[in-house]
Amino acid sequence: MYQCVDLHCHSRVSDGVLEPDELARRAAANGVDLWSLTDHDEVSGVARAREVSRELGMTFVAGVEISVTWSNRTVHIVGLDIDETHPVLLEGLAQTRSGRIERGRQMGEKLHAMGMPGAFEGALALAGQDQLLSRTHFARYLVQKGYVNSMQTVFDRYLGDDGVAHVPARWADLGQAVEWIVQAGGVAVLAHPGRYKYSDLQFDSLFRSFKGYGGLAIEVHTGSHQPHQYDQYARIARQYGFLASCGSDFHGPQESRCDLGAVPALPSDLEPVWQALSLSVR
Image 1 (spheres, rainbow, N blue to C red):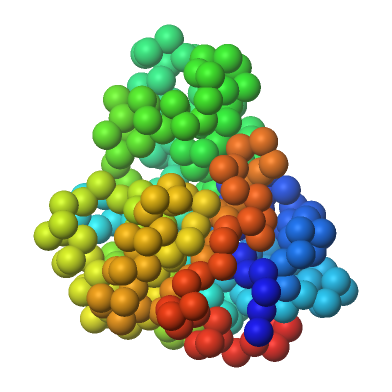
Image 2 (tube, rainbow, N blue to C red):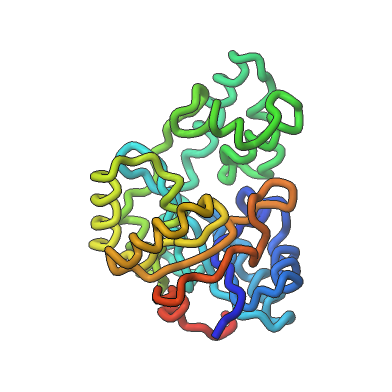
């Protein structure tokens, strides 16, 4: 039985601030005994995370977080226990990443017009490469330059789905993302459902569609949920028959609401997602 589990976090390979090996060491220092690296639309950090996890005696499962467009909003699907070398998955992730640079230019132009010049170039420098450019890099840059006082404010006011500088992205379809994960031998998890601004009817359609495509789990305890939402999504897991997952959604020590391994244990009556994983040190 695993005592401390974290199945959602990010490294510098996508929009985190620590390298994969640094994340592994931080997780071990925090008492984590089962974890997954789930970078956005990218798996190149998995091998290093696995290697260091073995050295530290932690159980590691390869992961990814895929960006999806559903009902005109961005939704994230975590894939756990994937074969990160599977060609179908790799091709799908490459397609998903391909539109990031043009979207970034358009967001940069909007921010420039609002009196925040240099955002595109600054965000790109933080990302390190075109295809990994994300809104988080923009938010990090705007805070560093003093244009905005917090990253959350950046998303609330400028870059969230309803923000004035938001540029819609066309990500993968929900069914595609689940298929890529399943073909790569993994388990598909709906990430932080409490973040999505849908009506009750839309949520019902999302949960049913996700399950119909082969999705098996939802995140219940996550650093991206407020504590009052834990019970809400525990009820959803019971209602729709989902396995339950948990993770910090950790990006960096100064940015994240929740540190690695700090989410509370799942309710005892929920079936944890790790019961469906092949838990060797992989």
